[in-house]
Length: 193
Image (cartoon, rainbow, N blue to C red; front, top):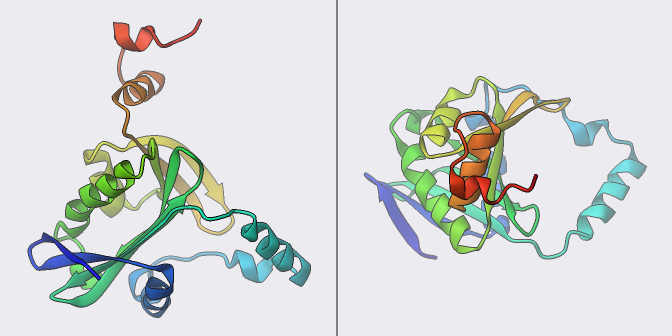
């Protein structure tokens, strides 16, 4: 298992879900002790849970990325996500233990995640965050993510959607669509009226 140094004494390792899942489950409450979420699975009837499990088997062999984050070879956080379509990767969950936050670790890790996903050929990375989670939203905006939507869920409450477009023309189109930039000639040439 290759360890990749990325920031001070921090490193990461690409893991299988079977390797990351027990670490995630063991440390989840440490990283999200301040969050409240509704247990959707607990709300489902037995037949609804069975149907959901059957439907999940239909998803095939989609790409998944599981990353363990380490400080001096001690596990201190994770990232995991996966393919949602032929062009979209969903950054499902990233967390650092509280004592490792606010040090620039997340900002340093983000370009590595983006690079891995871009090399796989995805066009868009998106994520969903509590609308007040500035510790994650701000570094992502600085890295080039764009706010692309809002959502209210029974499980997490109000969420902001962030998306990163690898293709520069699609990125310019989003900046035009959101009202941030006037379309240039190149962008206008790709708009069908």
